[in-house]
Length: 478
Image (cartoon, rainbow, N blue to C red; front, side):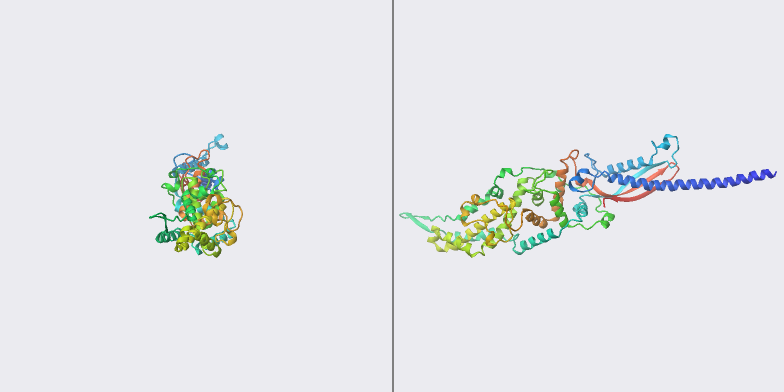
């Protein structure tokens, strides 16, 4: 009978031990499920980021994931499907050593739901998401000398009112004075009188204003790029897809967007006249940022006109302070027959000559800049290139000059770009990126507003043993 007591005791003890063992095993299963979920979530979300757009990185050093994955349909649902696939592949045991030996899966997990809650599209917040990446990429770039030169140029521009003074209206006032005075008449036959022709050399120079700047300053205008695009295909001319802006985590880690840094980045990645890039669809990309036209010619012409306006104001300021040039203009005006017969015409005619002379000098400046030379914002007598006789032969008097002092074409462009509306500049920059990426194989439908760099996802998994877990994580390039 005593032996029976021992058997019952061992049975009860074994029950307790087995209960403890099974509890420990089940606890281990729960911990393993949680740990595997953490690992698989990390692998899966990083795998999504590993699908960054290769061409965008190669050409522009930007890390974004294209939600179209090279197709026509851009949708964050595509990324959710990719993420769920990565989770499932890392959760399943099929093909593993254990499964080939008939060992049962201890965790039996599967991906349940994947929902992307937030994501930062490149064009969100008027391009701030894209510019945040640019700021991070350019964080070590030395900006001191560039900033100093741009600030100095802008200071002179504002000091002399180059962007505000209307020299055309001033010139028109002197021309109106000539009309008010009227030309003298001489008798050509008995009782027949005709006006004495003024033959103002300024009129010859001013007649070229309608010819277009590039036609006047280019040695061979036919060599200017004729590339053309359909702007309606690009981001600045269409309604953008929207994300959720810059995620808080990315904003906390990354620096503030710096517009000057963004501008320096654009000059690193974009071409302009004289420094074109083979990869680009539009050859004069910086000029496109400034003008926004669909033709290379029109963009370059627009920038050349702007340069001509600035240079004409600066040259008028100088020439009206140069007593020697004023004396030359008065001597030329005084030699005209009409002025000899009507001395009151002397001053207005002389000033129209001075304004025309400043215009011809400005054409020379634009030609110098496009030829790789330098032109100071405000000149001295030593910097003046054209003579007064150039008024009667404008095209023939302009000469290419790759020397000089002052600012070069790139530095004038930097000043223009810094003064431009920042949102306009940003979206046109994204236009250029789309133009260039679409030229690469497999990217004909590429659009930046389909690309994200940071995302937040809610993931859930289930186990055949009755367990289910959920987590929310944020991952991105920051």
